[in-house]
Figure 1 (cartoon, rainbow, N blue to C red):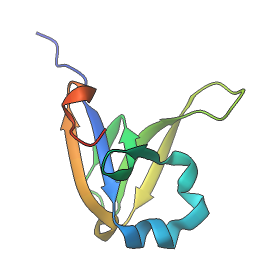
Figure 2 (figure 1 turned 135 degrees about the horizontal axis):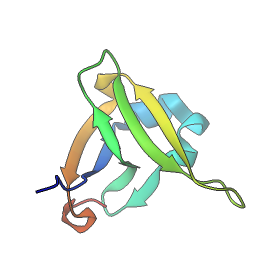
Figure 3 (figure 1 turned 180 degrees about the vertical axis):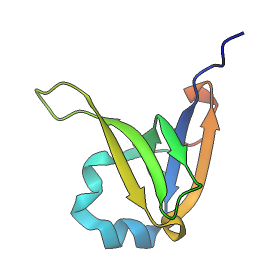
Figure 4 (figure 1 turned 90 degrees about the horizontal axis):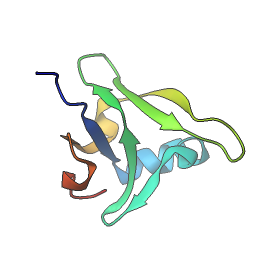
Length: 89
């Protein structure tokens, strides 16, 4: 049986959003509990949290984007095979 693909949501701390400022804002999505990163994959085993997200600028094809942030910037990480099951998305 093939493994279902997971989706991820990462909520950053307010300090992280303030420190990263305009550099992170294009990748954030507004949800019912504030700003978050919607991700295809998250790797917590590295020195920095490795986030793989899909990003699309207006009038451009979507591209895969890798973001690395310090672990202390993260408030919450959630994963599910169903996007609707992640409570803050």
